[in-house]
Length: 331
Image (cartoon, rainbow, N blue to C red; front, top):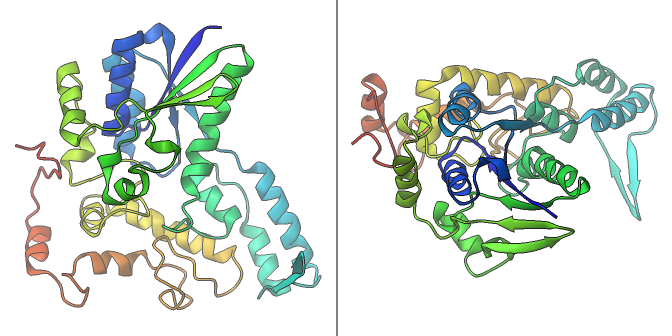
């Protein structure tokens, strides 16, 4: 049974360092490189992951995308019953739930609820809202499941699969608390079963090690790291920092407008007065608004406490630095 080394590529620093290691240790003939397209990436990341890296590393990068066709069919069937005037109540076991749908609202949602071809937006349409810190289903639906399906195809073809994952404990405080000494993810190597293995070669690396791997291999980092971004996955990520959101709004205002349009569309296909927004503000923070991203951007320009604008931030907005890096890459 031959071993295929499948490297998940996101266009970020950690997955790029992982790809460099895989190539050094096993060569490109033994490796497969795959990019899970969430539909919420910045254009620079697409160009980097699907254009620059394949050319610079001499590799081919396959692309996988989540498909929500079945979920749309189920939701449309449910909305069709509500639009026809059937009872709004659903029963799960002994519990009964009543939704605030009216036939008119269901009919309007039914007109708008169609696949867009964008995995992230389609996921939010069928789930009836956006992911949150406590309900972070985006990683599972948009990355884990498509990448697992890719590996399963290789397993079915008779190969053993090493799934290379660019996971670092030191990537963030929350990850360090969540992973250090607990759970399967803290293991650098583990057998999943059926010929599938997970390998996390940079689990204990520091961020300096990651960028040094780029430098030694002659690979430039994603250019977004020179434009104030801490992470270069989703643009924006629901977990992005206050400062990063401010940089996104300053440098890439079109991304903010795209999220605002997504918020309005998702709000229209959810039950009336649902607290739908990209950044969750608590049950009362939404106040029935169809879009809140602009108010969150305004908050990102304030100082600690969120009540007054930060003068240093405002000065930076008026005279932005051409190069800005959280990792000292501009020095």
